[in-house]
Image (cartoon, rainbow, N blue to C red; front, side, top):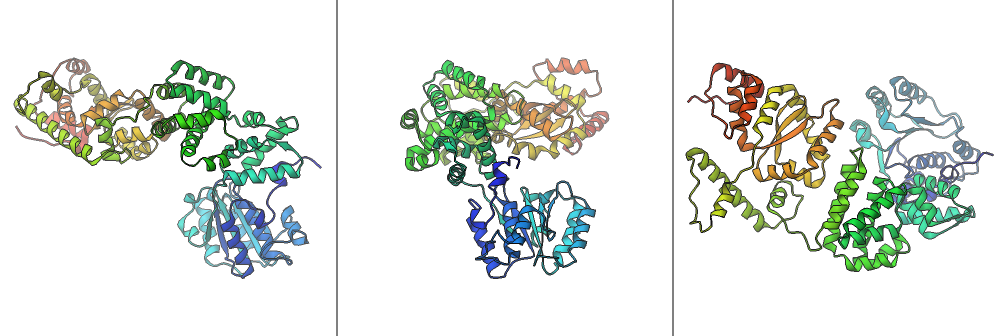
Length: 582
């Protein structure tokens, strides 16, 4: 007989064989024992967690004449025919390739007939979220008026795509990711049964790389067995999964903590030269920092989960403060989000390496801009006193700026003993008026509406720190190549301008949300927008070179309203325009 993959050979055949889903399997067994089965079930959860296996076991158990305690015997003709897929009364359907209305109507018509051999006719619909709207409507009628002796089991990895009218007519079971320890125990049992030698550390690496999926774990184990020379070693598991050894992570993080920038970059280069993938590198480093943090608080738990730990790991756990590990995890997590949307992940890895290696060992002091971000987003942690102080400073700055606009004189505050303090208060960021006018020349209402429609999704895709910045902003004008972004506070606008990665991240994410449209952002303070808008309206009907000339001037002239300029402004800005008579 041809070789079969491990995940097929070791597929669960009884409820007790399903790993990590005790609550679900016990509920199904009790329902069969008490004859309280439903006409429709919905199995949801990540891939490889036992949804389809549990559905087949349920079909066998409910039809098996020799069922004991809700478990199938797996020896009678009924159980064997279901296991081998030749039982006509147990129909397994792949909704990904049979997602049309006609296929579901055919199933609905067949459901009207009584089962031929089995007690119950069972339909197992895999990847049910792939059904079309019409197909769901056709299935809904059957679920509303179920026939006797007919059971539907719907399985999916994306339950949010299933209509609520379908979900409400089923019993839902959410399969969870399988724990690392459960996967390790199951893999060790299989290796002992097939008489393959192994190192315990290798099984832990495979279990962690599977990310909670037993099928993935068995597939990786299959590869490791083929790759090995008879014994599945740690080196074999590392090579197959692309994971980092503890020695690699020990050296890299130790160099970063001791501010050895050059050494950390050399270690990174060596790791990437061995073929390690950027995404796997970041995942392993995140888990490593998490293990260090947990080892400081609960060493026994980490030893059980991770297997044998190196002496360097234990030394680092004593040397690196928890506050620094928090910051490492934050930086690595942000980089992991950014790497998903780039074609040059190595650049991001080099940047985060420099950040880690230049991070101060002391707990970072919150800067005023970060405090302002925490006030709006709730992502940062700042004390109430700091937030209150910042609000007072912003209010004072706004009053001074308004007074400066009205009278041309700064507000007289406390007697200044040092001229530097006064200059610092009245300093404002430089606005690139020429670029603003060029954007407004090309701006259209359609581009702005298109941008605003995806703005909420764009913010959700950003890392935590950048999301905190962008919550203070809104798009106010957009053209085919660039768009204007107005920030509520000038200090936040300046911080966004200083973020070298923010513009690239916004463009990359916009290219994923909108087809053939990824404009470059330009940041300006919101309070400067009315003056810039009026200046542009005044010269909107002039030649483009005049706009460039105005962009080079130090001040923006206040315009005189005219019918043409008002009409042009309304075309450009719509409801944002307010006409004021002088």
